[in-house]
Image 1 (cartoon, helix red, strand yellow):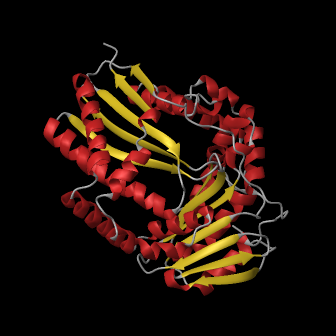
Image 2 (tube, one colour):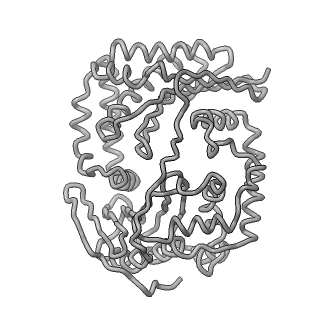
Image 3 (cartoon, rainbow, N blue to C red):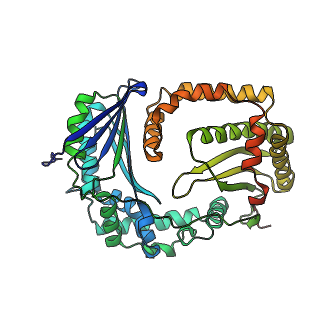
Length: 432
């Protein structure tokens, strides 16, 4: 792979000393966050995003947009098809994966310090020189056909697709994927969309975390990321008004013959999106998961994989979606749903007792101690802080927030987020 002949320049450098992060601004509008670490000798992780994503494509072009990164991944970059690219990468530790999701385009990957230049060349080519390869496209479509036929033979997948489609308000883009829908994917349109989302440097934000020296990585950043052309135009996502149906809802899907059931209980609503609100939501979910595991799995038996988890969305609107999910025998569905709702009502009424509060706090502290020594944690935290317009230094308040948790607090949070007027109940049962 060759060097880029038109490098850019670092025009601004800012330190966030308390968390060891440097922010660079390049002459073409690219922003870069750097955090050198010594957690692993042979690991540098990176992630990148630019707002826009598939929301900027029409419904008619949605499948082409959604599949564009997979098509490019299969087709190769610059003068290298996938086979020759794989040959070049033999013996090197470099992975680079582009993506286009609803509100942003992105790129993720990892590389070893000695393969740094190869990684930057690969990032540059994925950004500026996707290949068109008809035979790779046909091969990918055949693979997808086989994958979909296989996937749709599993009742759990049909159930998951149905739930997602309903929770999108039956939005066109969330239709359960079928083999027939592969015909909506057009190679030329996919490449055109990919280029539109990737080719302009302005607005891209990169985060690099791992074993590097700033003086070694900065020339690479100027040469390759600074060398991406820029129009200076600012792009952002479109709000397509995709939202869950209002009010209460119950849906039972009957698929398969095995005596297995799956339950997904959901609550949705608007969310005040900041670090403290997310922390409080996670504390509530931690408590509820403890209670559900103890009650449903240990006391009532016959349930597997029970837990409560939140999906917190900032863009295009700040919303939450809580899911309480588990698998069980069909005859236990009603009993276990009832027990789950009892646990939620108990938190609304009594909050969190001292024993569980200690468990929540200890788990939070232990998990955070481990996370602070992981490159992946820092990469996600830095990138998400940038995307959400939040101060990364707030992470240093975490232990203080944990110490400040009180059992009473959980009552108000449970009342607020488990609004039974917005309760959705989904059950998968066998056909017979």
